[in-house]
Image 1: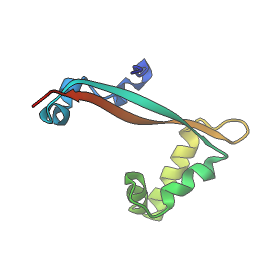
Image 2: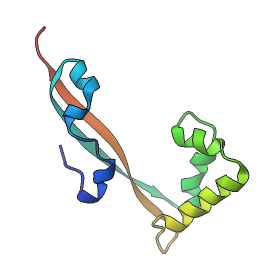
Image 3: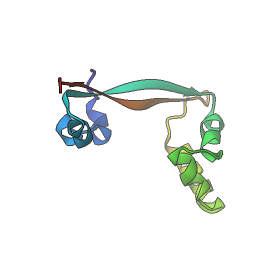
Length: 106
C-alpha cells in the first residue's frame, strides 16, 4: 500500500501495532494504507454547501451547532486558507484509510 507523504504524517495512523482493535480481532499481518480521492469543486460555495446541510456527518453536526457568527467566521476562515484557483475552483484530496489483515485458522 502507498505510504503517505511526509506532509501528511500528522494525520497518518501510526503503526498497525497501535490499532489494537484489529489485533484484538485476531488479525495478523495488518497493513494500513491511504486511499486518496481527488475532490474538485466548481467554486467555494459548492464546497461549503454540504457542510451547512442537515446530515449525519461529523462536520455537518459541528457546523449546524454553531451560531451564525461562528458559522460565518468558519466559512470566511476556510475561504481565506483553502487553495482556491484563479478560476475560483477548489481542488482538494479526500482520504480514506484502508486496513487489511489475515486471520489464521482457529
